Amino acid sequence: MAQPQLTTEHFITDARETETTLFLTRKYSYREYTVHIENKTQTVILPCDFDGSPKPAEIEWAFNGNTLKKDAYGIRRENVSLEILIPSVYHNGEYKCHACNGVECVYSTIVLQLTFQIEANSMKNISVEEGLGAVFDSLVSVVVYRRMRLNKKYYERLVKIVTVRNESSYNDYVGFQVPIVSIETRRLLTAVRTRNEPAAVLEYEYDVGLEWEFPREKLTLANQLGAGAFGNVVLAVAEGLLFEGVDTPVAVKMLKDEHTDDDVKDLVCEMEIMKKIGNHPNVVSLLGSCTRNGPLFVIVEYAVHGNLKSFLQDHRSESTTTLTTNQLVSFASQIASGMQHLSSMKLIHRDLAARNILVSEGFVMKIADFGLARDVHNQEYYRKMTSGKLPMRWMAPESLEERFFNTKSDVWSFGVLQWEIMTLGRDPHPFVADWQSFLEYLKQGHRLEQPTNCPDEIYQLMEACWEFNPENRPTFEQISAVFENIRLGNTLDVELMPRLNYAIIMPATSV
Image (cartoon, rainbow, N blue to C red; front, side):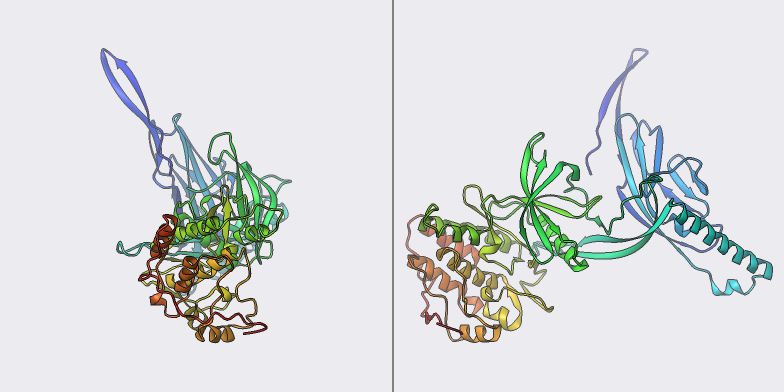
């Protein structure tokens, strides 16, 4: 929440000078109220808690986006509260109170959910007259409800509320916690904004905080950059995102129309992971999001050269500038630096490949696509228990056989990624048919061959990443140290990275 503005004014009275601080702040920004109505005399009071000097002159209330009149039937407006005198299901929804005191204007949101229950023993003493009266009241309620529907003043809608819960760390060792995304369906009766213009029906509403919120009207979408099974990435221009009055090119991730709730959870989870990762020069940064009044937009850095795999393949042509070996080694070194940052947070990427690396201005590498990323909580591993497509040709043996992932399985994938870089985007293990035969192939000691013009030191590092025993693979910190030695012109630390006697065999037809 933004800090309240503080204004100091001086008053001179009878030769005495006094100083008064003017301010206005809210005690909460968002609350959820669930109230169980037990009898017909029970009322519901919604507080609008503000603290300020001077006190707000007037407080305005709105229900589901529509201003509540002071003489609204069944509702009493006090100075700082709203009292519902005869609660019903029609009162379920979103309430907002808005206050101004001449210094600042602030608002608070309350989502009200009323539940009703008629106790069985209370039915025993109901007289015939009372029973008929209850039936009459029910009929009246139905008639009123139907009139409301026919007059188009209200309509019923189903809203899916998306919430995020971040588990807290109990010690300094646990550096990264997975955001838990859940979706709850609620039925709301919503007032129409005008007679001819119904309020917008939103399938999803996101309760993910506003600290990253960017005004949707300041985002101009352009051409599509890429697409997946259920999502698109679109080039856009964000007005005033980084600097006032300056347009910034960005990439926007969004869902396709045919998405599922699980796709929503995955995109929200990826967004929340990016929030927690923070900034690193070799990791794509989250710049903002649009979660209100429309579809979910996740705004990230735009990489002018696209993904690394396509970038490398484009540079095979004689018509393009040739990439030097030093540049290729620099690409791998930058990615190792980014992975060192992620692994220090105990984050497992699980899909480290050239297609998921972006190339920004100045050939700066950016690790992207955290759709398969998971944290490891108190343990440094993740075992996949659900079905779904996995990047088989980049996966370590233990991941293929046991669906077991940890930082060392990311190291294996990094070795394959290095091979992609040094071959200018060739496909690794192109003859792989299924995971069982591929696993047996790796168990026999076969590895990718040394690329043409690949320095021995670099291939030696690849082999170290492809150690069958995960414990014998280097860490990303050690890998970064190797690249630093290469950059400085030092020889490779043979004791740290022993050269392995793998059989380098590339099958002609199949594995």
